[in-house]
Image (cartoon, one colour):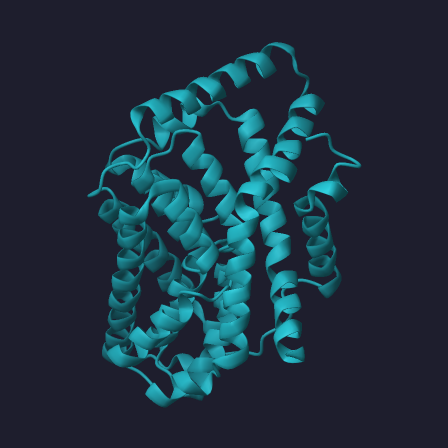
Length: 340
């Protein structure tokens, strides 16, 4: 039980800085970005899916931090396919994870990983496009109307400071209330996986399709960000797992966790959730098998490029972020500083 609690606190400290960043971005986006811009560029069509993947790929947000941003995109008029594409591309790669990939895994993985992430985001978005949008037209009109009225009001009367404060207040009240239940459920599931499923289980399967499928099943409830997954993947490769199997972990791990899946179901519906999972699974395995094949053809030994990993963020940042999120998640506490 002590190990379970310790792992839960550790996971909270790992996730909270990125979740806090995501909440801030989402709040400022609601306050400053007109909804008609998002609905125009991230609405229906294949171009919207591609745009969402390209916008999300460089952002330094993890699988928890992307949730509030994607939720606000969806509520501002982005289509389900574009939102799904953004949800895949953003946590799977980023400027931070690419640099860490280059340092720990070498130039081949640093190039191949973001390419695979962007392509999997586009493919998953197109797969989601085969289902109907889960919001009714009336709901979308209501959201658009509310956003339009809100922006008309703020553009006419609010100053820079007022807009910023309004966005941060939204992030620290309504948005965190909407997401906190699924975030807690996701962190609990991830804690159970980290505590009771040893890495040795993966090493027993080595490489190939069975190992990749097992990697997918373990990664779904797990919380792991793209940057933090890199040293773990490096350890897997040094222990004997193929680079393609490690890539499956680096793609499916950040793109799926219980919190993300719960929000997808509540915001976009079960058909979208099924296609989202199917797209990630197929793309992760497909690009993993392709990577192993290319490594064999080109005779590249990636183990020679591995280096030692380092701590990504100082511990005090994680603990401070966890305390801040806990404060804002508990209504009686935050009401002392914020009127809700």
